[in-house]
Image 1 (cartoon, helix red, strand yellow):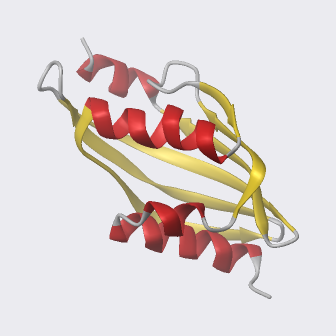
Image 2 (cartoon, rainbow, N blue to C red):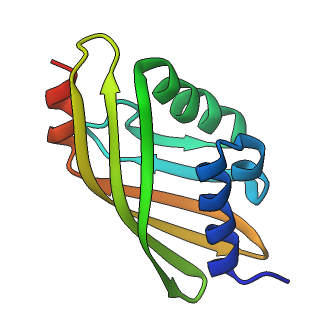
Amino acid sequence: MRTPYQIIKDHYAASDRGDLDGMLADLAPDAAWTEMDGFPCRGTHVGREAIVREVFQRLGAEFDGYTFRLERLLDAGSSVVGIGDYSGTFKATGKSFHARVTHVWDVRDGKIVRFEQFTDTLRVADCMR
């Protein structure tokens, strides 16, 4: 059985490939995905369909070149912390942004059950105005 660290590492590798199915492969059906207040897809989204619709599809529709670049991945047992950078260009304004970000993941029984994002939402909001 893969460790929580390997599961999240595999998620990020799928993200780098643009492989949404790979990103979702280890997501529990009732996973809770929380984006910070002030972020375009803020709130807690529960379940794969809601996460895809409210997070991934929305970011893809509203931003050009939206990316996450992983800098460090920290193993904390059943929790894993990813630290890196977001960047992209908001389509409606043509403005770009760059923001540091931390992701906190919880894995139980080989499935991702919780994700929480911490980022500088002001940098993102500035590109949207």
